[in-house]
Image (cartoon, rainbow over all chains, first blue to last red; front, top):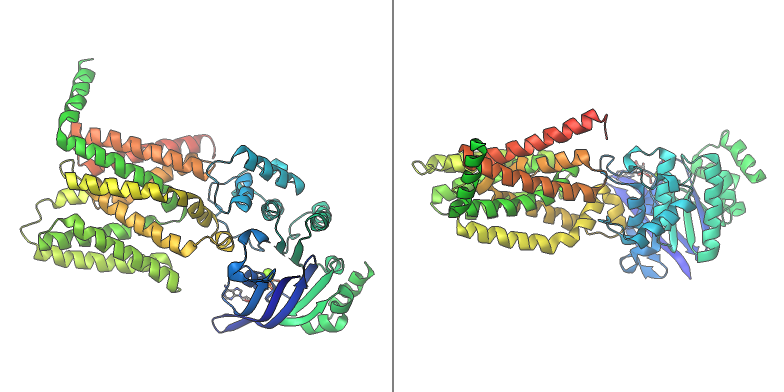
Length: 246
Length: 278
Ligand SMILES: Nc1ncnc2c1ncn2[C@@H]1O[C@H](COP(=O)(O)OP(=O)(O)OP(=O)(O)O)[C@@H](O)[C@H]1O
Ligand SMILES: [Mg+2]
């Protein structure tokens, strides 16, 4: 089955065309790395799949149109954490929203334990009862990840989840994602600027407003695709060669 | 000793007057509504919405005085419509909410002034409408407030989704919370609560009545549920104390209630400031 089918997707913001004629099919269980320059519409693509931006075209998730998809299927880590920094909230409460889809008034013991377990898995147990508004970027990233994972999603939509996470955390993140995928058969779409990480994916989507290349890393992460997506490659070429060494 | 004795007697005496009983019941009910709404008003930065809607209520009251009907029955639909209009402008245009409020604020005051000028000779109880009056609450007001409180109870399950969208609208949207519908519900609810609180608190202070308990509680809370409970408690307590003070000192009831609220806010502020931030 296809985890995600996108047909002729287009997104406009007023006059500005952010995505155009995007079509792709992601098989269930795939790990897709999405790469492209800043402003390429990578985040917009994930938001369209979540129904957060109006679009033209068709998006189906696990064979269902978006309107029929269960929100619990999706685990989302946004690139920009837009939450109200003055809202009185503890990390463990945010993680629990992943389970409850509303803000918890009181955490049941069971919910709290699940939330703590999710935090522990991403190495953030110590943050559980800390006020969210005071966490650092990398700490927030981990809490958001725990929130996305706690519902055991079928489709993980991760928008630069490693940004701000320290080196050890990053390695742990990829390890953990692999293990979760293996165990749950989940599909992962991960936006990244790290081509080396992209090389480890089962599929790579190179995009810039349109799909430039989509397929296994060795077919999509070619010099030609990257040149097309990023314009002139310049020293990016050296990065690419560095990546292929991995 | 003798002073405290007369004090107690006066309070007990107050409780025997039907008008004071009505004011007290109405005060308790609207203070619960205010305490429940205040955390959302504070976190969503809606205190200016409260101000705008209070002025819409003024226009409604003025229209009622002009047409010689019960002012609150005019203020209720008028304020509700203004709340819907403000929310509509916010949702459908690029204008920010405070701009939308500013427009309707001015419109309401202008309309109110026109109505009031035509209602000459009939504005005797304007002071009561402006600052609240213990004598103002009639039996039909109690029925209306009771009904609203029942409605509020039926909306309690919305606390979780509303708080979620208050925390982060996009996360709530991604989880299919009907965020826009909830925005309309919340502002409509604020409008109706505000109008019903007008008799006790008065038009000028009613917006503060919806903000201060939340602001004070926010200073002392680490979680949104804690904030909500504390806000409810502070709102209830300050209304009870304020109404007593109003009776004993013959102050306008809204003014006494808001002064007690402000006192609690001051205490919360002192506690936060002296403990070096939370
Ligand atoms: N809500 C919006 N309104 C108007 N324009 C938008 C909006 N969201 C995104 N855009 C525009 O759409 C384009 C794509 O944005 P998007 O965030 O998807 O890029 P991205 O590929 O994720 O970039 P980055 O690598 O910097 O995160 C950008 O030019 C951006 O300015
Ligand atoms: Mg992005």
